[in-house]
Length: 325
Image (tube, rainbow, N blue to C red; front, top):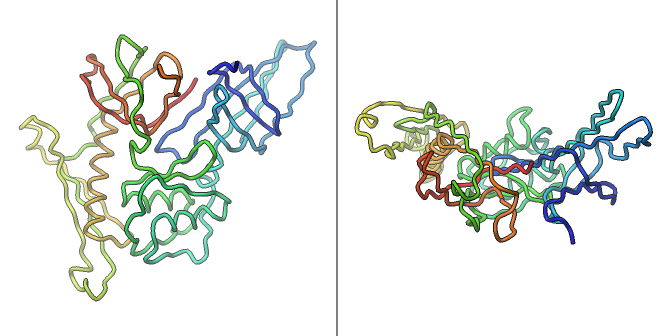
């Protein structure tokens, strides 16, 4: 029977395990998940071989469960008089979208769905796109900026629609909304499965008003001032403290791409929600990689948090990232 927590790296149909150290990370705000493993040999007296080389295709599994499909990016070697250490680092196939430039020609889309644009941007690098969300409304316009990477172009497009571009275990691009993977089986509860926690509680990035301004392309229905000026505004009314409400803090976001009033409002809500979430960002260390039902803890799932020390009595929160180490 396979150890449910054994980490296996597969390269050229060969499986490698028995690592001295392991770290595997994935998150909804990351276009590519990553891994770092290391192994040490004693020498002299042990035959040393390094069959895993940078650039090799690879797969990473936990207990036989596929976690990552991608490439080995680095395999540094270090040694002293007693031992040799080989470290192996890699990332998902989607790492190419982070590193590489958008090279589409033509480089502009008009009245094309978001999914089609992302598929076109990813196509030159041989990556498939999976959407976990319904197709959004048409984009009036999207243009690749000079020398920008594929991911930056995708991220700039998706921000308007409150969508994240991430990846899956097969190395596909995934378009997802926060929490689209459902609810975790277990809660995070102090005194049960929580070992430690860290929360910055940094509210310096919060504002009382979020304003989005921009322009939309004119047509037979919208023209003149209505076309040239688009704006939306939302306020941060989550604080019950009356004194806090009187404190004026305004953030103005200018959108370069053509934008409709509906998208401007969506963008403003996105900015408010993102900043509020980051202000309460909490890192928990838990007992084990798996929940009580045997499922791995996964990112982009909702989890009930019970932590009276921090002040979460029974708060449903998003697992934005996970690290197995």
